[in-house]
Each structure stands twice: as C-alpha cells, then as structure tokens.
Image 1: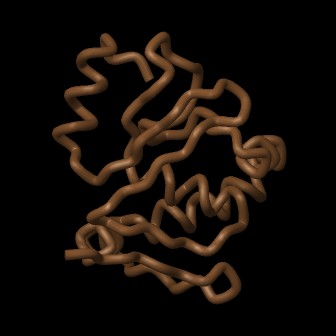
Image 2 (image 1 turned 135 degrees about the vertical axis):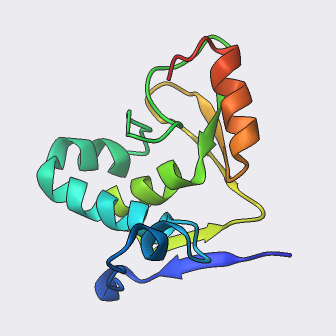
Length: 130
C-alpha cells in the first residue's frame, strides 16, 4: 500500500515540539528532513546549487557523497527529502516505492529506501564509508 508524503514549498507545515511529533508520525520524519534542507539552502548556497544541478552531495543522511566503485548505492529517504528541500522543491516521496536518482557529477546511481535494514547492510558491506 502506497503512502505519499507531500508538502508544498510555499506553505511548509509547522513541526511539533517533541521528538515523537517530529520523527514518530506517519511521515516518519521526512517533513522534518525536508524543512532542514530548506534551512540548509539558506545557510549554504553552494550546497543548494550543487543539489539544483542534480548532484548528490554529502548530507547527514546516507545517500550522496563521493562515487563508489560499483557506481551505485543505497540511500535513505531522509536524504532524498533533505535534497528536495535544498533544491527548493515540494516534498513528494512515496514511502512504499522509494525512488532512484543518478548524480549528475559522478554518474553514481542511488536507490532511496525507507528500509533501514537494507541501508545498514549496504553501509556495513562498504566498510562503513558514506
């Protein structure tokens, strides 16, 4: 069953006060990550420009950064949400389907998922390197 998390850039919702309100709700914290991406774009215009060019720069979530030998990586949906915020885009992520993006700088393909077990397995297999 598909659940799409969406927010419009021009009318971003306010976040709850507590951790459980921000991270434990039905959106699984994606709105919070997206809002942080919007803030980060103001703090770091160069990072926002990289994201706008389709690059997948290093962020606090697994998903971007330097290319790996295999040319593909697993990333967190929270990375994708923050990246959409950096780009000034509306948030639109399907929790069930995930998404894929290819970095325009490195050519690295990233499959974004909400399945943390898949993410941890990929990180441990790569030696913990981001």
